[in-house]
Length: 178
Image 1: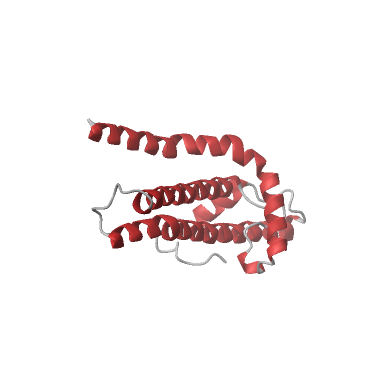
Image 2 (image 1 turned 135 degrees about the vertical axis):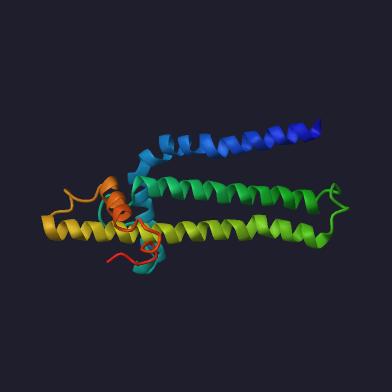
């Protein structure tokens, strides 16, 4: 009976992450893009991050909706792993529940959940956001050069479709866009 409860709980957690979390992000986080970009730019200026590592573009919109969704989803997943690591830390070191488990294995599981997975998740998210910012900035410069203004320029579909059409084949996807 306990095994069936475990499966039901894990299925409910997976359903929450795959279905409910993206809906929550689209409804409550993405509409606050201006605030996210504003505070992100303030943090960027406060921390003196080098220009090559900026996540937010200097021109509006600053960040696309899909990038905000991906960033929020990645941070939620990293936070969930960190929380799971804290639960494991409490179970392994502050209770006598798992005395039969080897200490090295329990330390490794806690370290992976507390440090390794969140750091890798946030690093991959930041690399993707920097790459997306470079694509957005490049598209904004293109529109400013040929149309004289950025306001007629890059919308989400313009950036994504132009990039996807130009680099759709597997052999060309490794090339850096010119």
